[in-house]
Amino acid sequence: NNVIRIDGSTITLNGNINSNNGGTGGDIRFDGNVVLNNSITMNSAGVGSNGQIDVNGNINGNNATNANSLSLSTGDNNVNLNNVGNTQAIQQLSIINTSGNINVGAISTRDNTAPTTNDTGVVLTSTGTITLRDDITTNVIGSNGNEVGTIDINGVVELGGDVTLSTNGLTSAGSVDFSSTVDADSASNNRVLTVNAGTATVKFNNVIGGSEALNSLVV
Image (cartoon, rainbow, N blue to C red):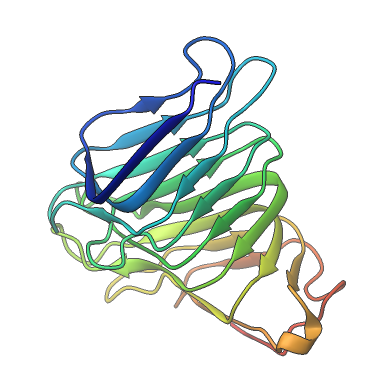
């Protein structure tokens, strides 16, 4: 396989990463904290097989004014991330898989584009399981004011911790949309889901807690 593995205390990315080389997809793994110097795409989806993407460190933007985004695609393989934007929020996080699982920690985004309408902050898409372990915030104040990002979660969601989704900015708010079911990892863990979207729309399009009940839902 075309495996890409990079180790380091700080790993700065300037360009896109593709592990399929027009054929079999290989794993992409970072053991260390990652800094985005540009908007970055990582693709491990290949022909016949797909690689996994693992980041065993935090992912951050390079400064508070750049609009650097991160897009990941692994086909039917998994994505495992720690925190994204915990010290320097990024513009957008997009993970789009066909069926691989997605497992993410805390995510923070800011809208640094031209002040028009709220842009997409976080998109997580898969027919596998999408595990949320920590909070998602898209209302970090950007260089162009108080616009915020939307949150779109397209797939079955499992809460691996108490999770708060925040899209409520000072002058605007972003929508939050869950396309499928939302469950706790275990009812005995008493998971709490809080959605703070201000005046924006919040949609739950399927059952909440049908398989493993939540302790509480606050919207």
